[in-house]
Each structure stands twice: as structure tokens, then as C-alpha cells.
Length: 364
Image (tube, rainbow, N blue to C red):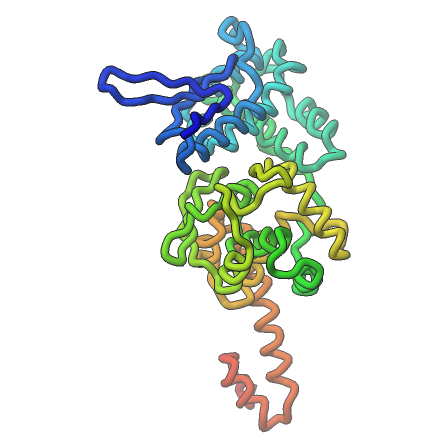
């Protein structure tokens, strides 16, 4: 059997005679790799470590010598705090990337001198990309909040700043017409239809869907450990998704692969999927994340509660999920109301009873 050669992997035998493997890349922390090279758990951890190395900025030289009371010192201290440690690994990477850029521009400034107007100006400079502006504001809030905790200042001026609007109405939710158009263009058996099925019938994020493989399926259940939240979900495989999987054989660790049979990176998957959406004639705003919203919408329209929907989607907060259930309930009740007043006066009380609506007293 040929030996697997993997970049940045170092191995040694410990004092108990057990083989140990680590991902070691210059400028980054050492990451342990479970199992043996080539195994599913090893390769999944290796791909994650490789992606982490590509996305995470190198450790700043001289960070330990940051001047006390500066933004630099607050950022370094925040990295070592429980607040940062409690964030999901993916969120840590993204937050660190944002803060490293922020400290390059403002690191030598006193964190106590940071005022509301300064933060508004910094965030406004990112207004052309609302998503980036939103994430930057969240990162600044976290840093200033940490500064308050350790006594560098008494207030957090970032708390009163309105979040940038990412787009009117939020991210576009796919309609049933959009889904049908995509299915008509990309039939079962194609990679595009497989991507749609995984996104629509698991309600998961892009980062989780591109890592899914047959090793995550057990007795009709697909087990997902979300990168963003760290939560582990067990989701029954929808019959339609099972039909798609059966028609799309895969010999790789992930269901979805590039032309060179490699797992997708998040950015590459987004670009590829957008192209498939354009081929199907979908609106320009149709996106990967919009399918996650469509999956939640479908569950709400089927009468599922916010808690039931969150058990599938893995939303940590119920606020967004409750918007779907509220909208679905409003439409359902509105239909019931119109139906109740559509018949004759004799039929109206019957319609009210059938739909569970209150019957108006004749004397009132």
C-alpha cells in the first residue's frame, strides 16, 4: 500500500507506542489530527486544518509587546479571553481576520478614546458591502465590551449604533417557482440537483453542506456538526433527498466535489452554484443562503413550530425562525378569515367553527 503524503503533517510515536499526527504550519498553532492518514476522520480534520491555515492570518510579531490601553492590547487580550474561546471555531477565524485588519489601521490608538462617531465612520466606510460592515460592527462591539470588562473604559459606544441593512427584506428567499425552475433545468443525477437537494432538505449552511459525505449517514439519518455553532444535529433524510443521493453515486469523502474531485471551498461553491442558478434563469439575488431560508419557510408553512424548525436548521437564536412561523401563521389565518366570510350568512358560522375562529355573537 502506497504511503499517503500530506502537506504540513508531522508524525511521531509517543512514549506509549502510539502514532500521533499533527498539522504544523509555520506561523500557526499546532493542530492534532485524529485517526490514521486516509481515514474519514483524519481527512476531514486535515481539510479543516488546511482551510484554517488559508483563512487565518499569521500571528502578529510583537503582539505581546502591545502598549497597555491601546486597541492592539485590547485585541490581544480579547484573543486570550473566554469570550473569544467560547465562539465557534469558524466564528473565531472570521472575527480574527476582521480584527487583524482593524488593528492594522487603529492598533496604536487608545481604546478609551474610541467614540460613537469614530465607530460610525469606520463602519460607514464599509457601507458598499453591508455584510462586511455588519461583521465589522459586531467585532468592534466585542472588543469594546471586553475593554469595559477589564476596566479600560466605562461604556460601549458601539452598542447604540444601528446595524447596517444588508438588503431590503433581508436575504432573498427562494420561491417555489424558483425551486421548480432550478429542478427543471438540473434533473436528478446532476451535481447541481444534488447541491440543491442537500441545501433544501437539510436546511444547513453552505459550510456544512460542502463537508457532507456518506460517512455522515447512519440508518436514514444524516449527522451534521455545524461549523458555525459547533452543534451536532441528527436530521432524517427526506425521501426526495434519498432519491437524489441514490441517483448520484459518489466515491469521495464529500458528496459535492469540484471538477478535479476535490472538496469545494465555501467561496468556490458559491460561485459555482450561482452559475447554476443563472443557467436556470433564476433572479440575480437567488443565493445559497436563500435556500436555507426556503427550507425554513417550507417547514413553517407545514405548521412546524419555531423549536421544531430550529431542531433541523440548528439556529442558535429563534428570532429569525419565528419570523417564518409568524408569516406562515398570518397567511394561514388570513386565508381562514376570508374563507369564513366568503359564504352565505348561514355558512359563515360553520366556516368559523371549521377553522377554529371565534364566532361573533348575533347580539353584538
